[in-house]
Image (cartoon, rainbow, N blue to C red):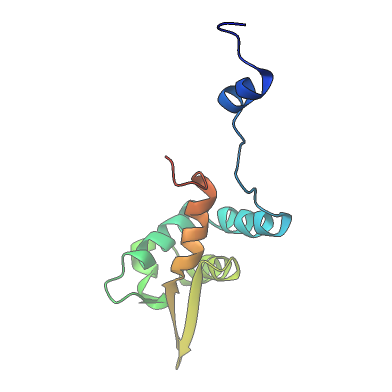
Length: 119
């Protein structure tokens, strides 16, 4: 038949696979936990402040002013970001320093973009 496509050709053209290799159940739960942590505007701002830090890390005490929240509130939000794996922390004396975990942020980006790198 001239001009007619086979079912296989039509599926290949009209119905491409959603993902080349979909996230496993465990990977999806992990990525969802990170996105849930970022679903709060204060935590999203905190991650941005940490990511923009010239030294690559910030003392928790220096985040209270820019965020405009109380110290206990900032500490709570940093704890949530830490538990999601998006930030690491290191206690130095009485202060706690935080830094972004680039691999975890990359995992979020990768979950949103096609596996083959297309945009």
